Length: 473
Ligand code: GDP
Image 1 (tube, rainbow, N blue to C red):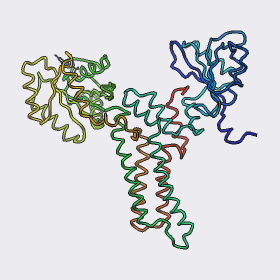
Image 2: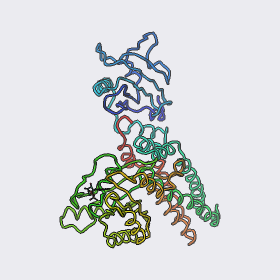
Image 3: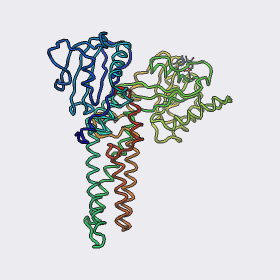
Image 4: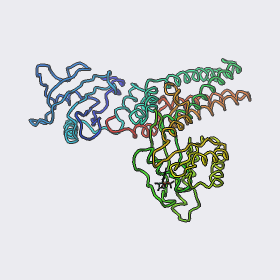
């Protein structure tokens, strides 16, 4: 009879193409679950038949031969064998390296499906790795983030998370919380005897320490978010200032509509570019002016929304046509409305006015901002602009190697909830409230922390997380 542990290690056999669909030298089709070695044996003919079956071979071995559907050869392949529990999913696994064409991989997959595998769901391999305890939820998410990373910093942050820095830190937090919870619950068991297993002063100290640790993780999200999502950068300015042109130049390809007509960038356009390891998420906003057309109103409303959400605002003006009063007013208004957001003022079209440097200086004097001169069209001053953008988010660089950084909204929210529960617990201790109430708050802090690593499993959360993975991951 198989034990429940063994049963949980060997799920239903599933298969999927693990590499992107398209033409390439090689591709990988993989299987995991109960009986996959047997399935592979049914369709695989080893080049050296004396070697015996795959089911009898050791883990971490490679075998060369042909995949066949009856008498029909499907492809010449390498088969890699992983034996439970030493595989990614901890189940028996087979990886077939075949030739990389869309039809070849389809045929290989079909062969496996015809021979007893079910098609894997998106993220099912990683989900099994998590459910079988091979990785925690944070690490599973880090794998997804690493695959989707578009900048070196996002990639490095994901690698750090995969290594388990944050998991370890949360594990320590959980232990401390568990310790305090256990002592409080013990008190409840002995409630008639009126004993305190941890003095309230000690408990307060402990809670303070925990609050500090959770607080610093919550704070780290400010930077972590910039690394994983990119620096939200709103390009604003009057119509015709050259916003779309700048956006296009920065992205080095035509993605926004560049037009002579004011207000034709009807909505905002968002694209990313990476400069010196940092990813910037650029939003071109519809012209900030009173427009009559409905569609423009909508565009303008969303522009304002985008500005409020930005980490960095680039205010662009046409320095040749600048109405200093109006520009100064707009810049000052932005600064007043969004004091927490970095503001970079750019004088565009320096190629059109002889006295553009002087003009830029005037705006600088009037606003107290440093003004950078560029020509988006002639691609002048762009390196200085990018360098300045980087300087404005400086500090990110130092964080690239920090192992303990919160980069996901899900983790951030759970930690904020944990912080609130800890604060409630502190207040209850101060108010000399009943042990039961304090224990309840500590328990919920514990649950919030557990949700992050997956100690506390919420099926819906799992579906969302693994649903974002590709099939075959
Ligand atoms: P937006 O309304 O702010 O998005 O402005 P656009 O990017 O559509 O640019 C308006 C016009 O200004 C277009 O004709 C651009 O070619 C032109 N333009 C943009 N940047 C420059 C520049 O640096 N120099 C010159 N001479 N023209 C520019």
